[in-house]
Length: 311
Image (cartoon, rainbow, N blue to C red; front, side, top):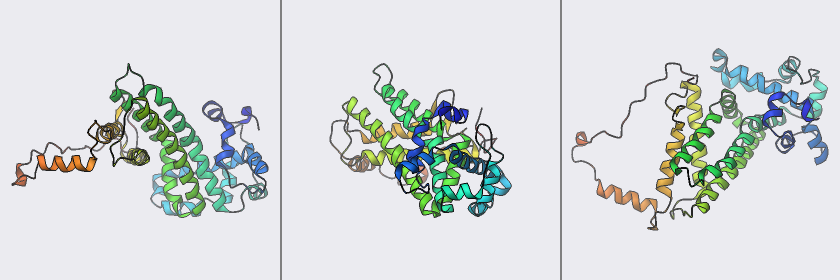
């Protein structure tokens, strides 16, 4: 397979050589043979057929109500039929024999399908963004809050793409399959490593230290979980209450700012726990609960176009 054999979106956005690192359930004993078949354009055509079926399924609201039946419906016959309807330049010659030659079981195919979805919609774009964000976060001419919000806005923009939301929904359905779950865990490890390195370079580049009870890997997990949770909410109600495209800010950015303020040692060497306990002593509960100012409460109006992103 050469780069010219790949679909245009793959040629533009991705390094095709990395697919052999994530599609690993191919039915070959020797590593070199497995990697070669993972990059084969027929293999990619089978995987992309599964991607299209998933996207079509989750865009059909009537079918999505019975989403637990989806994995039963994703059969080898359905995948082969979809491959035969595929776009150029992907091959359309599907057969039961060539499918079985690549995957010994449905679980193996599901694992590689989850990995393929993560690869083209999550792994490479997010790893690239993590590494590219370092320069902005360490730019002395850019306020740190602005740089943080910009990195979070771009991250959440990737997460909120309709295809990415489809992948999140499918991932939730695939948790019962051990092979698919392993593929998803590997994706999380890759992305967390990239963002963890970005956070480490931010701290080192600005000579910051975390508070005693703050751990870098835990902060990376928190921000990743918040991003995915907000993306799932965008799937339901759109991005109106989550992102501001004009200001290029987001609730993920607000979370990152709060974590920076809380977790970075200001020079006192104290833990977050001690500081929160001190805060509680400075602001004890009101004798009459009705005397509270209520300033911390806000009302979130539902999006007028639930399920879609604002233009």
